Image 1 (cartoon, rainbow, N blue to C red):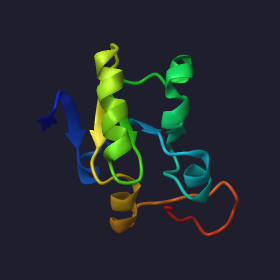
Image 2 (image 1 turned 30 degrees about the horizontal axis):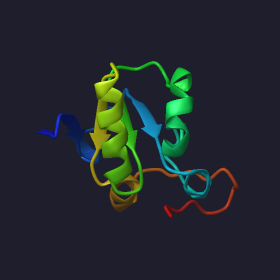
Image 3 (image 1 turned 90 degrees about the horizontal axis):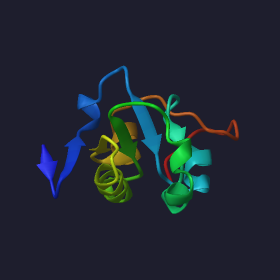
Length: 110
């Protein structure tokens, strides 16, 4: 589906072979994230474009889908192939998908 020029996908539609870009802030990432995600906070993205992982498309995720939608629009406007993951990490945990925490504590989405 497409909205405002951005491709979107639900979590249940995510392919198993994918590059997942988590754009939440550092504290959110540390509390809990998808095991295979790559982390570049939205606030650092413009300065870290060279750090974007190889992958086409990049599946962009945040907590609920708002920030990832903006990042997806930005990336697509600047030559990347990016897809917004609707419902974000909140939807991820609702589906019971795996979550890891950098601290070793019980992972959670904040």
